[in-house]
Image 1 (cartoon, rainbow, N blue to C red):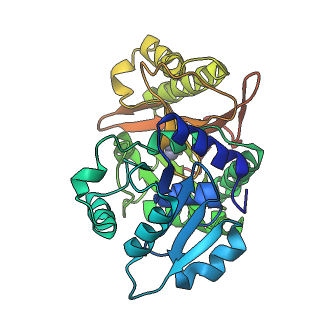
Image 2: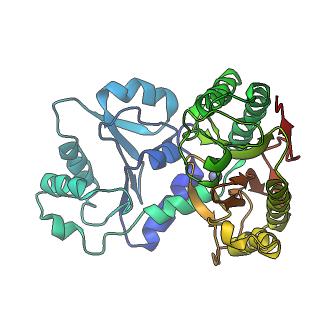
Image 3: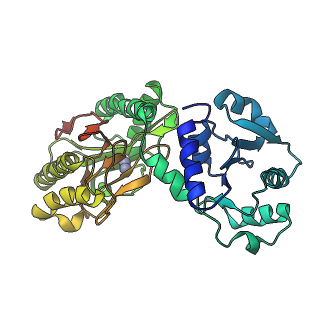
Amino acid sequence: MNGGDARRFEAVRAALRQQGAAVGLVTAPTSLRYLTGWSNPSKRFAGLLVPVEGEPVLLLPALEAEGARAATGVRLVTWADGEDPYARLGALLRQTGAERALAVEHETFSLVQLAQLARALAVEPGALLPGMPDLSPVISDLRECKDEAEVARLQRAADMLNPALDAALEAIRPGATEREIARVLEDAMAAAGAEGVAFETHVLFGPASALPHGATGARALEPGQVVLMDFGALYRGYRSDITRTVCCGEWPAELARVYDVVRAANEAAIAAVRPGVALGEVDRAARRVIEEAGYGQYFIHRTGHGLGLEIHEEPYVVAGNPKLLRPGHVVTIEPGVYLPGIGGVRIEDDVVVTETGCRVLTSWTKERLSVSGS
Ligand code: ZN
Ligand code: ZN
């Protein structure tokens, strides 16, 4: 994947041709990383020019050149502190003769950047806009289907979750706080080789677990409360994402029932994942189980999201999504039921779509566990 992936550049060129653009300017950090293998460690401007004809050029800060040379085979052009990177960019664009047939990523290219680019090209910003093709969907579409090397990284990131959950089980006891358990999870992932967390770790106890995006705090655990843990590891740019819910001591009867329903929903959705199935159908498979058990009104979010260089990316496992699953898609399956004032249960796995079905990357048990109530 290093050195710039020729297949990925070819796909970008094909999309540019189709949209009548002569050159694409890629500036979103994740897109830069995906296409070149280099990730910009600073906030300084970096942009990748991909001409339809000719070699891609990466314009980057001079102080990053050494790191970039080790990470990518793409041709580098540097700008120094004190220089205007947009002046360099304008010059490069004029060399290609393509300054008016430029595609950018509409999702992330800002109005400030547009103004700076226009100034460098000595035109009005409004002159650049009409018909300016959008590269965002092109790169997002490419990134959706992971190749073997990407799946290997996602699998490594998922494997690091097992020792973390094992360590959390040891630490869960009455009086432990949410922050303590979160730290145990994060330390164990780091010890397993994680480069960081995939996103902010969520550990929620008891009634707080009924808030799907509640904040991990100083709450102390009491017997009979559930412990909802939603966290992930970062490995060579790729992310894992898991949720497990256990109980401190005996499960209260209703939450035990809810657990079994959510587990059945998780498994029904995973069983529905295979090429050619609409993402909305996978959501339906999970939702049907929860609705039939009478908890439909408490399943208040989509079933899952794509996972890769970003924690939430295309495709989304959401009601009504007609997009069809393809081999290489990686999505989370994370149904949940949240009973206000009582507690919530969510069970989340990461799955990769194969040629014939799917493979689950996360492997920690989904048994309904009671952990040291005394
Ligand atoms: Zn999650
Ligand atoms: Zn998730």
